[in-house]
Image (spheres, rainbow, N blue to C red):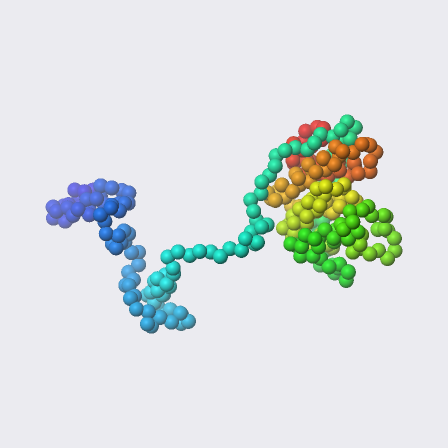
Length: 296
């Protein structure tokens, strides 16, 4: 290759062509090189535009040359260093998720459900999810009652009051069976997770509400008002699981196992609901290390 180049140039080989012929990789700049020189050739023959007196950014370029010159001028006006202005509050819900791999507390003797019972609950749950997906578009278009005011996704206090009711949320006292009585004040007893409500929720909203309720559940028992919303939110989580959902449902199962381990009577009405949530997380969402009894 070098010889052929020399023959075409009359027997005299130019130094630059020798380097290009002998080295197939780019030449790195040495310490004594002039950095004002271009290290790479220009791909388009555009002359430098030293003055921008005729440059009007509101007028579209009329020729390709004008367009490329405009690019040169705009690039020359860009600062060498740009610092982004970031609002840390907007990043709160997008932080790195740390998933704990710790398992559930083992159930006391006589408190864990049978494998057949768990399989039946998973089958029922799967049917419910398919029904929600099938009718979601219909239910999300149904008008809500005038007293149903959905909080914003970031309103933690608002969603806790909406789901649990002000009586339970503010006083942490059990609610009497007022749900079937006439003249129900849902602001006080909490709104049920109707399809017309949960069908309107995006996945980020589902994750936020689930996080709010799990946080409230952290030092309390599994009240019915809480349990029905946790079940409904699990039914709305899409698969495959996102990292946020993966972390939340495992946290929920571990909390349920902690509450179950403190129960004294296997006839406690709370036990069935706790076993159900643990079962769904472990077997439907395939968190097998959290499962009771048999492996998944």
